[in-house]
Length: 315
Image (tube, rainbow, N blue to C red; front, side, top):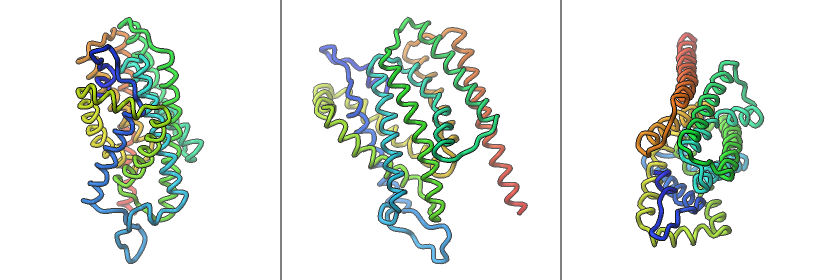
């Protein structure tokens, strides 16, 4: 759906390029979805009190550092999504952009090392290397096979998006550590709500400054078909992010990166099969290498989780 939004062409030949307006609508849909979910399942509970009562909304009792963490995480995620959309709007094909984003495991690990104090094994580095190498091979053969010229500006935006992914991974790891020190076990939908709330507010500000908000609304009013694509994309994003934020709230950001990378691989396959993109034999080999890295990472996480369960049961 995101690919369809930026491939849409109006009757006068104009394409949709208002990336920040798209981020406003997407984050707003996530805020609404998360608010409804919180109303159904309830808010956060403390994990160590003898009188463990449901807490008020997280923002009412969160410390300044936690609020700051949500704000920084929301800003970095908004920039990552916005830069990705700008890459698509500036001529980068969807498969190339998606595969390049699959390399986000590397900046996530770097950000977690620098900002979150994480440590990773040689296995983790080798798995990430396999994913990056495979996606790089596939992206290069994709570009060569299809004859499409990748926009240099689009490539710059993808690099900026990857940098923001690294910041997000480190900030989320530190945020989880701060909340754990305060004996707070957040609901995934609280992560989703407050992160997207900051994303929406910053997105509105950026859209107003750049003029995306007005021009985007005008474009959608003149082309209701693209607005239909946008709201369907935003709805799918809200449903998908509910699972992503569950992963963020319960697991390591690297696990979240693995899940989103797996999703990107399937997005590439769907785009290749249904959007007419051409991939050579070498490209399929690269895809296979990336899948091996992803499957190895997933297997490692599953076996490690089972080992922890066995150890806790023995104790």
